[in-house]
Image (tube, one colour):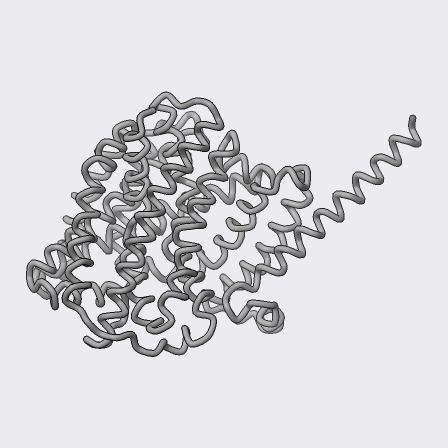
Amino acid sequence: MKKSDTFFIGLMLFSMFFGAGNLMFPPFLGMESGTSYWVAISGFIVTGVGLPLIVLVAVSLVNGGAQEIGNRVNPTFSTIFMVIVYLCIGPFLAIPRNATVAYEMGLKPFLGESAGNSAISLVIFTAVFFLLTFLVSLNPSKMSNYMGRFITPILLLAIVVLCVTGFMELDSSAHPPTVDYQSGAFFKGFIEGYATLDALASLAFGIVILTALQQKGVQDRKKLVAYTLKAGVIAGSALALVYIALGVIGVKMTSHGSFENGTEILTATANFLLGTSGNVLLGFIFTLACFTTVVGLTTACGQYFSKLIPKVTYRFVVTTVSLVGFMLSNLGLNQILKVSVPFLVTAYPITIVLVTLTFFHKFFHGSKKVYGSSILITGIVALIDGLKSFGFDLGVVQTLADTLPLASYGLGWVVPAIVGIFIGILIDKLFRKSTDEVKVQTS
C-alpha cells in the first residue's frame, strides 16, 4: 500500500473523530483552567487522543474486532455492550447531537431571531444534512477519497485560519483557574476528554479503518495492525494540535468576556477577529466537522449491524440510522445532551478496562475469570456514578462510592477495577489448582 494511502486514511480517521464535541470542549477547558492550562490539556489529550488510539490498536490486534474483545468477557455481554455503544455513538446520541450543533452554528446565526428559532428551519436543514450523509455513506469504499483527500484538508485549513488569526490578534495573559481546576487539573481534563466520545467511537471506527485497509489490499494481521497504528498516529497528531490551539484561544479569550460554553467562546472569537466573515468561517468549520463525523458513525453502524444481523443489508441500516438521526435531531440540542454525560461516565471506565486487559491478555492466559470479575466490579462503580450524574440519590451506596480513592476526581472506578483483576487472577489460579488435583486423582 502506498504511503499516500495511509496518510489519507489517517486524515479520513481525523475527520470521523472531529465533530461537535471536539470543537466545543477545548476552548472552554482553556478558559476555565487558565494558568493550569497545560496540565489540564495534557489530561484531556490522554483520553481525547491517546485512549482512542489505544482502542483502535486493540481492535486491530484481535481477529473479530471489538465484538471479539467483548466475547472474552461473555458473548452475551459483548453483544449487549456493543449494541448499546453503537446506538449511543450513532443514531441515539452522537449523530443527532452533531446534526443539531451543525444547525445551531452553521445556519441559525444567519437566519434572524424568528426564522432561526423556527422548527421548520431545523427540519429543512437536517433533512438536507441527512440526505447528504446517506448518499456519502452508501459508498464506504470511497470514503478515504471523499473525506481524506478533499473534505479533511479543507476543514483543517479553515481551523488553521481561525487559530492563526487568534494567535496573532489576541494578546492576553492567562487568568487564575476556576475552582474546578485549582487542584487536580490533570484529572479534570482527563474526565473532560470523555465528552469527545472518541474512545467509544474507536470501537466502531476500528471496523471502518480495517475495511478501508483491506480494500487497499492489506490482509496480513501484523500489517493491518501496523497500518492502523500509522493512520491513528496521523489522526491523533492532528487532533492534539487542534485541541491545543483551540484551548489556547480559550485561554486568551478570558479577558474579552464571560462565556457559558465553548461555542460561545469560538463565536465571540470569530466575531472579534473577522467580523461577519468570521461567523461564516466558524459556521463552515462546525458544519463540515459535524458532517464528517456523522458520515463516519453512520458507516460504522451500517457495517456493524449488517454483520451482526446477516439478513439486514448495509443499505437498510444506513437508511434507518439516517432516518432515526433526522427525527431525534429535531428534538433539540438540550434534550440530546441531557443523557450524554451519565452514559459516558458509565461506559468509559468499562471500555478503558476492557481495552487495557486486551494488551495484557497473554499475561493472565486470557482467563474469562479475570475479564469477568474486573468488568463486573468496574461496571457496578461506573453505573453508580452514571446514576448519580442522572440525579438519582442512592443514599448509603453513593456515600460508600464517594469514599473510594480518586472518587473526588471522577475516577473512583480505578482501584475497584484493579481489585477485580487480582480477584480474577486468584480465582483462576485456585480453579486451575483444583482442576490439576482432580486430574492427578483420576489418573
